Length: 169
Image (tube, rainbow, N blue to C red; front, side, top):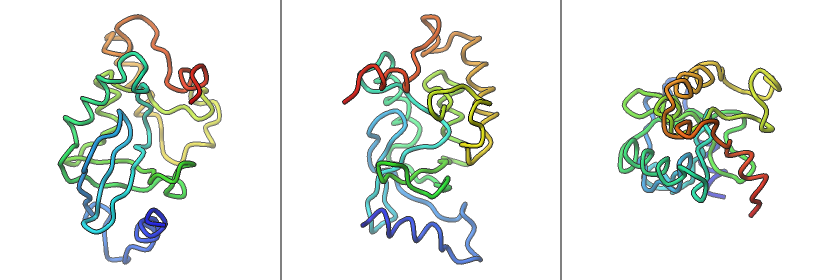
């Protein structure tokens, strides 16, 4: 119910309100691509769009979580909703900006995350499933891979979507 109220507030911002004017406080980083936030009244969970960080029990999952904490925990962020604003787990789904910088891009550039792949397929496969332009994230991943950063330090990294398929809850 709280997520529904938040979604409604995202979708029906007054037309004079710029999305960059609405800030939310990051309360707690859950893992490398998920965090809890508040608008001051309602606490809600956010899944960051554009990236897919290693799962916590996956190689580099703890590193991704620590890096996301360093980037956003305790800070104010801007959340720009993607798609219908909620993912299949009723988390707010959005692109997240911290100090005007795209958090997904920072995580991917640093080698702490992969670009998000719908259905675990490389871009441009299923490109109609993206509700944003994934090309900056794809390029950032290629650069991090070439530099052998973090998730790419041991050769080809296991994609989180592959890990989830091999290790269902």
